[in-house]
Amino acid sequence: MIFYQYIRKKKLNVVVFKKDLKSKNEFEVLKNLITVYSCYKTMTGQKSKMLRSKLVTLLSIYIKYGYNSESKDYACELLSLKKTNLNCLNSELREGGFLIKSNMNTRDSYLNTELETLSNYYKNKNSERTLFLFNLYIDETA
Image 1: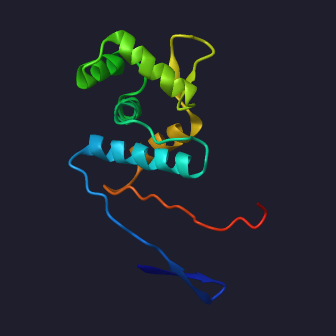
Image 2 (image 1 turned 120 degrees about the vertical axis):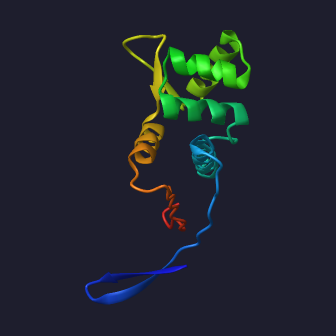
């Protein structure tokens, strides 16, 4: 797919590789979004490996419903977990920098800045499609 961009009446070709990721429901879209984000973190060397499926699902729940007692109860039910196992998963997300512990209440956490931005983007989008754009380039300064 080729998009044309005009800058000062000069036509520039911008080549875009586009593939659709179809999902059954909104929750699947969120899981795909988190998986792509995890891939980005791995590709840039910020994380050594991709997030496990349970962690992707858990972050999807937190993006959709927020980090609260109801969403944690829902996560326990959906993932067939006990509270202690959920606490271990939350700890793993905190260690990975995906969740940040609140300064005001140590039992509370929130999404990191990038995930919060991703969540806001997803919740406020104006269409049924979510667009992800990666800029791949060679860093001459490295």
